[in-house]
Length: 212
Image 1 (cartoon, rainbow, N blue to C red):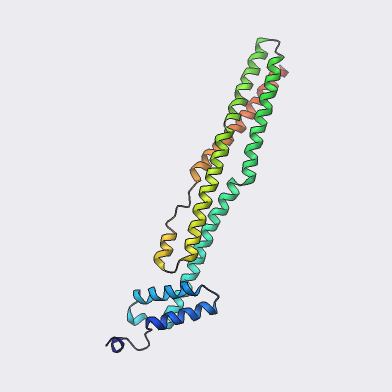
Image 2: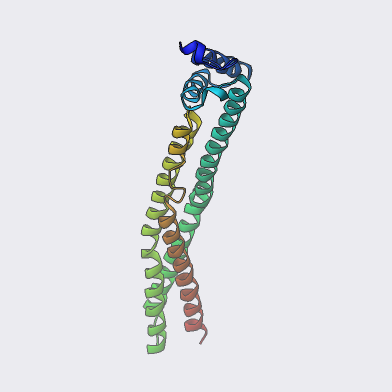
């Protein structure tokens, strides 16, 4: 009775799965994902639309969408890697080193003080450099947290998108938050700016103290 009710030319689930498998072999795609997609497609598609050309069109579109979504999530991870990668950590370490050198110079000037103004300038410079140095630890820690959490999240979403075999799974893979780690990254950048400001102000104060 089912076969007699099926429109002429409509694919059975077995035929749909075989067609999808053949398509996967021809396009070097994942055969298992193709079979699962075809089975789900057969369940979700009305009998009148269960045609071979429709399945092949939907299958190609699905794999293209899954590939694009996986690439998008990889790009999210790549952006985080560029923003918080080795060069970012090295920049923070350089700022910390600059504040440390400034602090040492301020201590030397403080030890060689010869007037109250000189002493005040050296103490103020010490405070600035010390403040910048103390910001280094939270800035580095937040940078590493941002990098690890964002990379883990984007890698997971990329894997899920690349392994999806149904539209539901692909939608689920895209439910992830591309801004994971962004809050920590923004705070780390503000701390880095503050470190640069303390180093600049401290150097200016030291120069003014010695010069005048």
